[in-house]
Every structure is written in C-alpha cells, then in structure tokens.
Image 1 (spheres, rainbow, N blue to C red):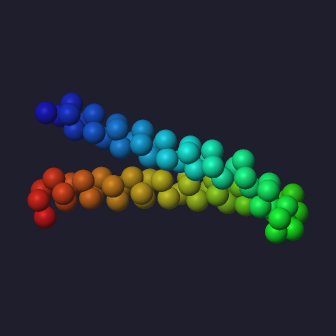
Image 2: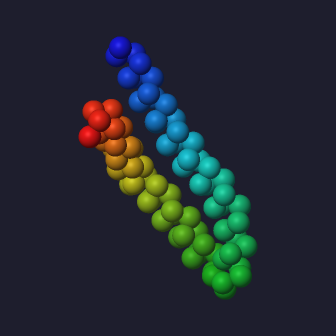
Length: 78
C-alpha cells in the first residue's frame, strides 16, 4: 500500500516540475518580444526573468504542499 502512495507523490512531483518547465517554455521565448514592445531595457528584461525564476523557486514547494493537503482531504472524504 505504501508503494502506491509513493507513486502518487512522485507523480505529483513530476507534474509540478513539468508545469514549471512548461512555464519557462512559454514565457522565455516571447519575453524579448514583449520587452521590446513595452520599451523595456535589456537589464529590465533580465531582472524580470530572474524574478520569475525566484518566484517559481519560492512558491513551488508551497503549491506542492497545497496539492498534497487537498489530496489528503479528498481521500478522507471531507
């Protein structure tokens, strides 16, 4: 039974990483176009990418805890 729970936890972890990487795949290629359109300097665009990466680093564990707690609540039937 425990291996089934470990499999679900690994699935949630991989799904979270996939969503993060998908975000990078969508945001980073179009960021220079938006930066140029809004008149941002190259340093400002670089700072934007750095802040985006920092926020993902900070909030991914929180999001993962939220998903796990929702899963536990749904599993208990509450």
